Length: 434
Image (cartoon, one colour):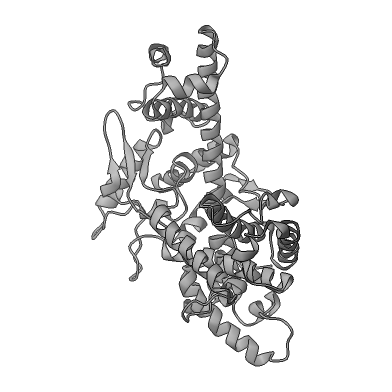
């Protein structure tokens, strides 16, 4: 069983402070790979087993890869060796034409899709690994030329299918295998769209397999969220419930909220996220609940000497706010107080965020149902068309917030509500559909 961050208290400080960035982990991976190869020079394996990682103090690497990058150690070491380590990147095939087109594809994704260096590096390594395996299996690395010879289509398809079978056996999850498949298939789709190949050698190949996806976090139930709010004894604890279950922010985002991001307005209070590398992108989180707790907490923080404006500050010398690990521990402590567990384990912020998305999905269904009623009155059959045609994106967002608010009002007690924000009376708003 791998260690979680909460199990790291007995580890050296340097171990707990490992960077989660893949580029930094690559350096750690290279060092431990050298260490392992020195000890096991005759081993038929290309990388260490999980037991060796644990026995030699590297179990935290497995946790980071799994939790932060949705990746097992086999995929990590495959990517590491495919990317040529820290040296200049080299392809594992020799065909110049194929390499030129693969590089052109990656450059195009950077220019058109805004891929970051880390994304490009990961996608390139996945493509490289699949192309290398294809070359080994098929006995020819002239992949661009092969994809321009329709007579080879069937046997090439079967070869790629065999490559995927072998990847599934080696990698730790179907997610990891599918990442490799999609990365490579997108390259061929790009080549096909630009008429540089006669056929897509991986067309619909994903449909050949049954993929056992890694399930998302189980959401907290409405009753559990209500119990968390009721048992919370401080404004800081109440903000854990609001932040993770109602605002739906990530574990690391809540403590990093700064007072400058918060707008308190009589009609529309919100938090502004401007970080360009935020996974969900830049945007606003509406504060429809918990404003009293938030205001009280900000007042409390403002009375602390040297407060730097963060919602959950820390006294640590090397950072300004609590770490995700510390926030996770606080949320789990609150769950223990409330007797909240999920699938036999104590609840975490991820389970609160999953609750938020479930309620948001329900609000979208409410919006569609309302559009359907209006459509019926007007003799239309397509509720989606009515919703999308008659409502602007801004109005759809406003209605989703109304329905979201109505559902949360049925879950949280009155003291969690923000009374003066979004109106919940829909009667006068039906004109938007007409």
